[in-house]
Length: 199
Picture 1 (cartoon, helix red, strand yellow):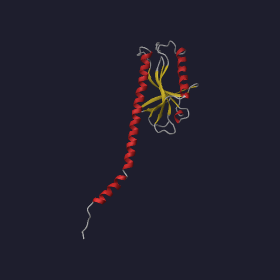
Picture 2 (cartoon, rainbow, N blue to C red):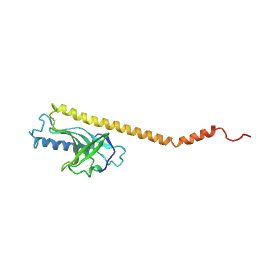
Picture 3 (cartoon, helix red, strand yellow):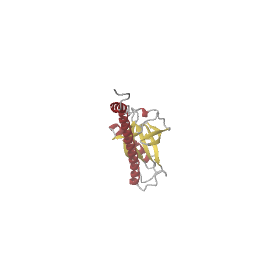
Picture 4 (cartoon, rainbow, N blue to C red):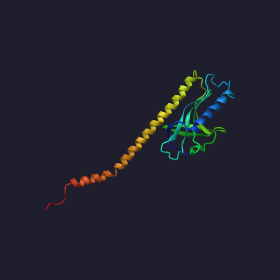
């Protein structure tokens, strides 16, 4: 996977992404009820939830090579950032299971581990907290998950705004620069004293 421009939030989920997110939550809720039930690593007062998922993409990426779904998945045994690339994009390929790749989320570069499930397809996750016994209850865990999403989103939007302002300023300067010498020559030509003897 090639390096990409920093991403930022692009808006709410479309219908296909919302359906995938429902399937992700259902898959982990089933795991919590079965394989993970009663294990010491699980917090008994936490349940599976998806927090702050939104569409993210790289600015100026006309081909949508890097766009997808990003948010926090909370379970009784972990809190992870989850990235699911849009299936038709370049970022959906070249990410082997178990291989770590970096995603540029605004000014942050975070490592995500590739995964694949038959009913979910390819996605990747970035571990935030595990286990979760520092949280008193579900509300406290959800608040932390939302704070992670809010911080990433705010930082990414601020970085994109600064980048867009810098690009705009550079364009203005580039457009004005060729005209300055011509204007200076014109003014100096009109005002410069004549050289040589007068009649």
